[in-house]
Amino acid sequence: MSTSVKYPPGLVALFFVEMWERFSYYGMRAILILFLVDQVQNGGLGLTTADAAAIYGLYTASAYILALPGGWIADRFWGCKRAIVVGGIAIMLGHILLAISGFAAAIFFLGLVCIAVGTGLLKPNISTLVGQLYDKNDIGGRDAGFSFFYMGINIGAILGGLIAGYLGENWGWHWGFGAAAVAMLFGLVNFLYAGRRSLRDKGGVPAVHHHPDSATGRRDQIFTGIIGGLVVVLVAAAAVTGLIDLASAPGLAKAMGLIIVTVAIGFFLNIFLAGDLTGPEKLRMIVLAILFVAAALFWSGFEQAGSSLNLFANDLTQRELGSFTVPASWFQNLNALFIILLTPAFAAFWIYAEQRWTIPVFVKFGAALIAMGLGYLILVPAAQTAATGMKVSALFLIATYLLHTVGELLLSPVGLSTFSRLAPERFTSQMMGFWFVASSLGNLMAGLLAAGMDTEHAAGLQDAFMRIFMTSAAFGVVLILLARPLTRWALGGSERLEETAPAQ
Image 1: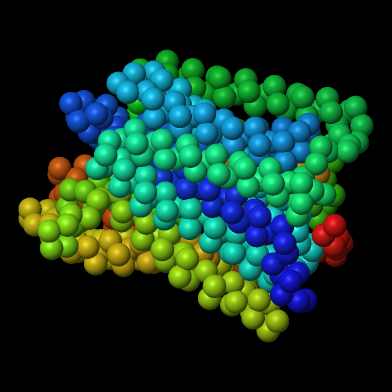
Image 2 (image 1 turned 90 degrees about the vertical axis):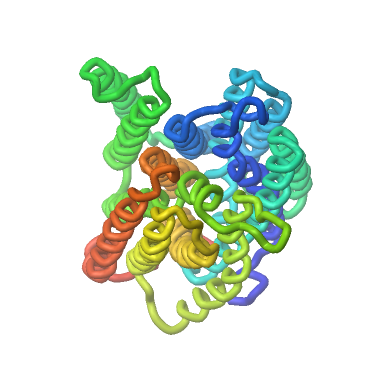
């Protein structure tokens, strides 16, 4: 297959749309927890580390769990294009609210809600559009295409972190939030332009309803009602028994965890049992469920970048270069920088490997978990040094971010590619939303983990980092060992699909 098909024209347009959207998201994320813990007289909200980390986890988790209804709305009613446009407008409005909120916390949190809703509409559907550009069995080309698309995400991330991070820490927090709003406007204009040209025949309003008959529709409604009722019952029971405190940010984060897990399981069972799936489709759904669990575990460690690792950079790392002090938020840009540098090599490797041998997706995910865990193992001696009161070399964080980036490139674009390819055709956007729920759960766990990693008491960081390493590496090894048996059982020994539908 030629290079022009590996990188179709629509991919370039989606690359730039996602670049600007991620500029807005990561630019704001780079300064969010720093703004929350900063003193009120400095323009921050003056929250404790535990409360700020919990709010950070709640926000990022909400942004990704809302990808489920975002995908459902596109699959059932709007189509991908309209969902992306509405989502982009909501994101831009949210950043404007952050920029003008001043000391009004209610306006600030309303802005976070708008961004979360908009992200839920945009994220699953722009990834679905990328998948529509490729043949189902073009595994190497699809992985390469998603890797290229992923580079756009990280160019936006590094620009957002540099510009919004610098403006926020040096000019004022709300200047950083305002820069994110401008970036989202650029993304919207670019998408509207592409929608009339390279993407004009993609992502339209669905032509048919998903349910083949009324009985299946009734089962779907019953499952939805059961899921909603179960969420309410579980959260209420946990609150009544004292397991969670709904009056505190950490308690709300734990409640969100219950909601995410319940909704994820219920959503999966709803499609699996009431989606009128064939036998092979059900087996592929089981594969996606296993990858979902692995991804959630990966993101729970990886997403410490915006919380505990951000605070580690701010409080425990030597950041002076001569007379210039490197902003703590800039360290998060290392991940995006490494993505940009390494993506061409990874994309070329996927195409090369596709022609010579098969690397099961379970092996890719297992290696990603091991790489992420090794990043924390490197920080163990750094935490030991920090516990003595000395600030540590920035090389520790640089090495950690490099390993985390390798893991991310093995998991995230590959996961997007695999979910877009193995998902039942009529549920593609919803299953892309399900993929992002793994990020939601991982972000929430990251926030809860960060709440227990107080940089003012660095002695406990060593054990925390070691636990993350052991858990991640162990799960990764298990995935690699089970890769061949799982591929034979669930996919008939090959990830290629019998039915192939060329991209239209």
